[in-house]
Image 1: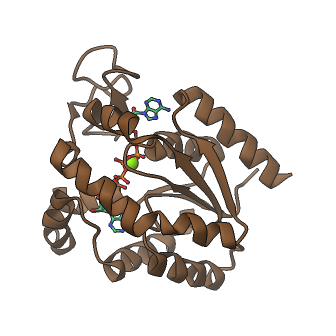
Image 2 (image 1 turned 45 degrees about the vertical axis):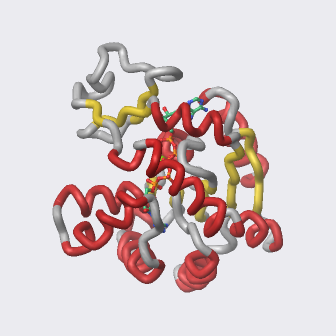
Length: 221
Ligand code: AP5
Ligand code: MG
């Protein structure tokens, strides 16, 4: 069974988009497309894109729309995206969403299915301060909610766990503000298009996963 559509995970920093997208993408056998991960990869490799994006990300601001859209178009041109994909952290502005509608139409996809993750800001701050990510496979842990078996080491591949430089409290505040200002309007945009579903992202990882499964089953049925 293939997804055959674009699934969009929308929500503030720390809402659990990446955690859930990784699991659902594996189950549905579609790519997990995180624009944040793509940018961090470019920063780590020191490409021209990475050098441009690095200071913007370190301030917790959004990278310009044309850069993001170019990166997404390039990624969608690969064959693994032919049967659907999960966007995590994209689109993040109204112009990105409008352009995505056109890209999807050009590629023969119908309307996306958009899932908003709702979590209060106190919980988001706690999650981000406790997040550690595997530097090899990208698996995400949390010292409060999902600790690795051995501190600092990935359960899956033994990779070293690292903290994201934009998870410092002062940057987190700016990321939350950017979300409210530039990304939250997408909730209304997608509601008006009749494609918005909402999950309670403050529930446990397993409970959120079950809620997403139900939404997907309903959408497929
Ligand atoms: P990006 O990488 O997309 O970061 P973000 O949106 O701020 O979201 P996060 O990755 O912090 O949170 P998440 O929802 O994935 O949470 P996670 O699952 O890890 O973007 C980074 C930057 O890149 C941006 O600031 C911007 O500069 C740039 N950028 C990216 N895309 C862009 C775009 N489209 N346009 C412009 N600029 C762009 O979970 C967090 C923690 O909580 C983890 O430790 C996890 O284990 C834990 N956790 C998860 N779920 C639960 C749960 N249910 N219960 C308890 N703990 C949980
Ligand atoms: Mg993420």
